[in-house]
Image (cartoon, rainbow, N blue to C red; front, top):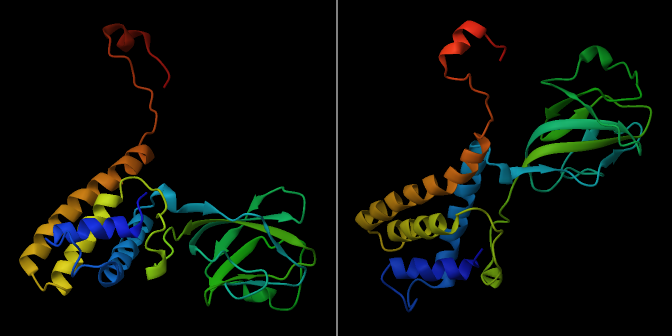
Amino acid sequence: MPAPSDIISTVAVLMNDSAQTQYTNAICLPYLNLALDELQEIYELNGIPVTNKTSSPPITMIAGNNILGFSTTPSLPSDLIEIQQLWESTSGLNQWTPMLKKDFLPHYLEDGTTISMFLIWAWLNEQVNLIAANANNDLKIDYTASIFATPILIGNVGVSLPSFTNIKTYLEYKTAALCAMFIAENPERAVALDSLTMSALSRSLGVPIRGMQSITTRRRPFRHSFKHRGASY
């Protein structure tokens, strides 16, 4: 994957400024960050596999600890956007059992009763809330992750972005469209570039979505004798 500076070079060309006298790295970088944030949200919304991640190593919750958040010890993964599934195991055994998500923890368990496993969890106040266990347990989280570390700072414009399928063209057109709208204040050029952006996005999403839809099916044979012989499918 090219570096942000490579993408911005193309943006400048699209804005008829190949020498980058006006559309410099510093000027265009905030708009590239916006394009990256938008692409991240599109990938999350469409469940594109590159946003799927599993926490590693397991998160060990000491007996009595019933809150797991971004600022607790231990803490949630810093790139976590949405939890898809939470798993638990007695600490060190690596025997994983899925946990049941609840909107709220049952109030009848507020009497201080503890059990050896958590069994259930609730997402409240941006934290995983658990019923306190009387033994150490490991947690493993399947989650939707943030794939772009935005905002990219000017000192990192030469550092390559993560390598994901066909995102370069989208980022070039989208960043140029934003620059045309908010720097050049040229709505006509912005609309034209945004149209190219949508075509690039369709291509970018096409490959992973096609992979997500590649479910193998067994078709019934198309022959006359099938009607009379019968089959089980």
